Amino acid sequence: MDTENIYLESVKQRLLGYKALAEKTFAQLTDEQIHWQPAGEPNNIYIIVKHMSGNMLSRFTDFLTSDGEKPWRQRDAEFEDDAPNGTKAAMLLTWEKGWNCMMQAINSLTAADLAKTIYIRTEPHTVIDAINRQLAHHPYHVGQIVYIGKVLKGEGWQSLSIPKGNSQQFNQEKAAGK
Image 1 (cartoon, rainbow, N blue to C red):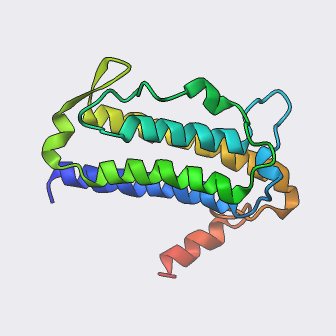
Image 2 (cartoon, rainbow, N blue to C red):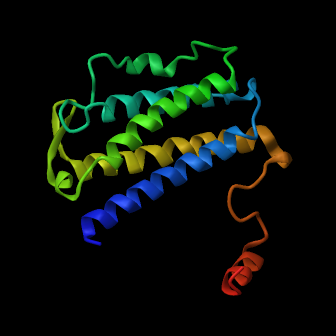
Image 3 (cartoon, rainbow, N blue to C red):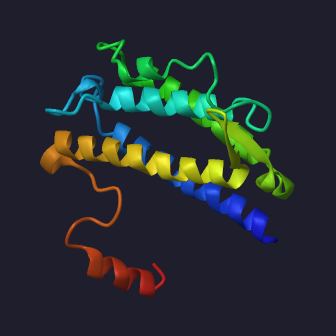
């Protein structure tokens, strides 16, 4: 496999890993909790999901042929909780719409596409750079989602990685092939 295709496969794995972390957090929360706002932090999980989806739809609709900041995008509105009684199920539909758009665009890329120039807010980017922007943007917001989830769940939080205090056991099990 050539370097370009290795890169594309790595991108897909990383993005889907971030998606899974957020979804494991969503699974632990109630409809009410997705709307909880930390003190001094205007963005609840619902708002973060709405923003991420809006970003993915704008950036990856007609990815190679139109500016990534679409005229129809209402970015400022993404930061408003316009459905304070909205359900987690409805939020997940918004989430999936953005992810489906982005992954469809990324899955359609070829090695030759990576050096092409696209535009975001009229600024030129190589396809690689545009993808790298997403690789930075997603973990930033997924980290916010996970943090809010941990705050809300407290002692009831189910760890998304190696539980605190279990690193040595985890490493031993990995070394033993478990």
